[in-house]
Image (cartoon, rainbow, N blue to C red):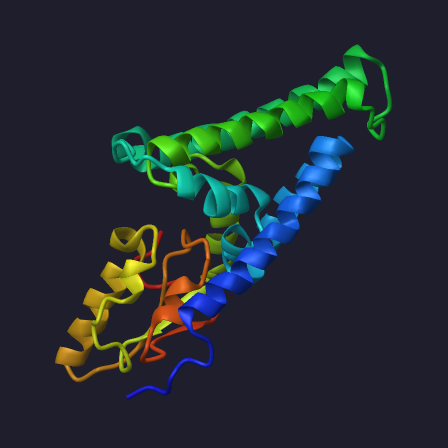
Length: 255
């Protein structure tokens, strides 16, 4: 038997909500009130950088858009139908949105430095600041619509270019936010009840842990680099089989 978790699920979710709320307030003030376009760039850059060291933990704890989804849109979600996963087969949709974001950024730079003949450091809200803020507002609106129509985090799983950048950074560095200790896992599936994508993230690990136990073996299994690290499963696990860890090597067979 594992030791009892030092923090229960309800307490952890309260802490996570406070973290998300702080970034949401900062986002509203900086972007929507003061119209500081650089704040959006900073969020994307920090998310990608943190992913290279700790996995996509930024997406689950600190992303302002994720905070809006978890604290507001998830409570309004109608869950009318599951997201049509064929739209993102082979991660085509995620890649297309990432390329679209990069192309949009490049167009903004061209618009300012070439067409307007202004220095790159020029940060006027009326020019590239306005253009970039329009992109941020579109992402916020799209995430809200998808959260209400589909499952709450469908935007994060299938669209978000910042999240895709984080996944690429995490895979390149061989990082994932959590691991499962197969020797401790008893297959109670309590973790899957709080995970937004258990069929892709946790169930394969639980099955692998069960197979290892049946062979009398044990291993530390990292979750997929696509996990956005809300850490609810860690708090929900009564056996402490799930824990925060960032392995340096990728799992065998992970692309």
